[in-house]
Length: 263
Image (cartoon, rainbow, N blue to C red; front, top):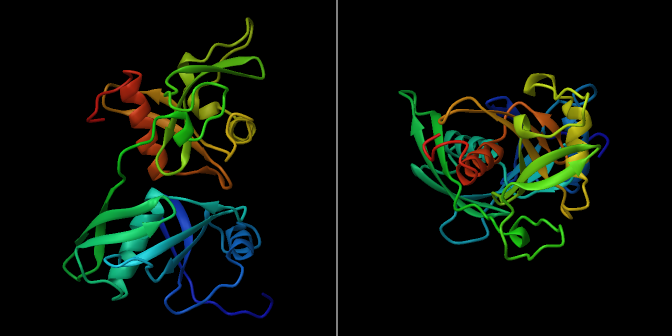
């Protein structure tokens, strides 16, 4: 890869930033290595990962999103990332339709774009599809029936007893209601903003229950229609936003009656 010159675009959705490369024009031989290099915020471009915008493999699709996390691992789906893909393909003339279909490793997603007076995309809505709730869909391997759901199940880590809800949004999520966590006597539960995510995130990400690792959302409801959360993304660490994580948090909130469906 030394001496290689590649055109790229950096975009973000709510601060969830990726480096994008137009695969219609450029072939990347080792995208995993490139993702590790460009994602480095000290010696690279700095991002949560790399997304290649590739030609579609199915009739009716406009393009294919190929996503890599900051550590080079392959990701199945990214809600903020796919919104930026939609903006890119429209603004660069790859697709002119208002309704787009983008292939991902989690299936083909439908997107609806809105444009401003200059014809550029200023809003993108994604149909994320139905969440996967069964243990086998996440996957969550805690020894229970793979066909059963995992709603509010106890998980003890480092002496703290968490209530975990497993959700798949095309990628695995563990949603934790932080303020309901049980702590040993004499130990104070940190507030959401003070939680040391760089310590707790990896403990969930690499827990034996999650054979494909897991994204973890630590949630505190603000009201029946608002949830505060912080996210640790597998392969990337803490990110400023996570589209699939926001969806998973609301699904878990509805299942556990923390919030309304319109949250």
